[in-house]
Length: 278
Ligand code: BTN
Image 1 (tube, rainbow, N blue to C red):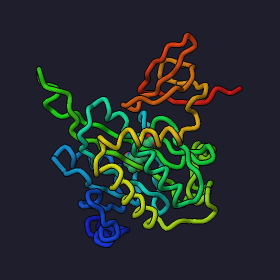
Image 2: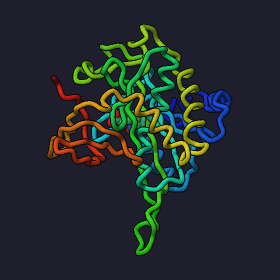
Image 3: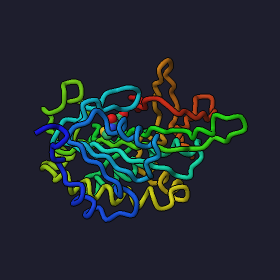
């Protein structure tokens, strides 16, 4: 069978009927194999694809994470998906989108699995201190923003979600093994990926497509409740520097607010957080 006529691993029509959503997945594209669902969807978004367009793949051959890292996306075991958002958010508040997506995913997985999940700033979901899900939100500013007098506006965001569902420890490469986990490893039994997907898509549709600007403060409060590092002494590692302080809060734009030793509060928009070991 040629690649063009290969049957998709999930039937898009059946999936859409199960989704029964208002926006997310109204346009659905399913691949057996693709380089990266984010890369594919960014090309569609640039050409004007509507908010809610959803791309799923059974396997990614060049799945990407934050900071240029790769994301292992083998076939048959995970959920690798991306969707377009075109929310009426300022560029500043759009920075909070990875946290908003994280909280919806973490709460959904927790409800499915019956175990608690935590959020790690800015875009990770952890179980037993190991990563179970990564989120990559890629933002495009509208072309008018570059013109003199043009206001900075958001054009679209492609939100990519990678969830380890049925991997066993030996399925991860040796460098991931100590840091990664899956729903099956946490619960002690495998999950039907399609059921997990349908529940997740329904929750994302309700939380992110109905009235996002108004919902954002509540989503951030829910995110705070899932973040164990909040209020604790942390180290924030950036490319060139390491900063230590108390993780005081997250701002409206999802930035990490640190209270430094001299009492100053400073906001950071990038870096890796870890707890100070006592
Ligand atoms: C991270 O942990 O840094 C983010 C990982 C995001 C992975 C997902 S899988 C679906 C989508 N396509 C990609 O290439 N990346 C995201």
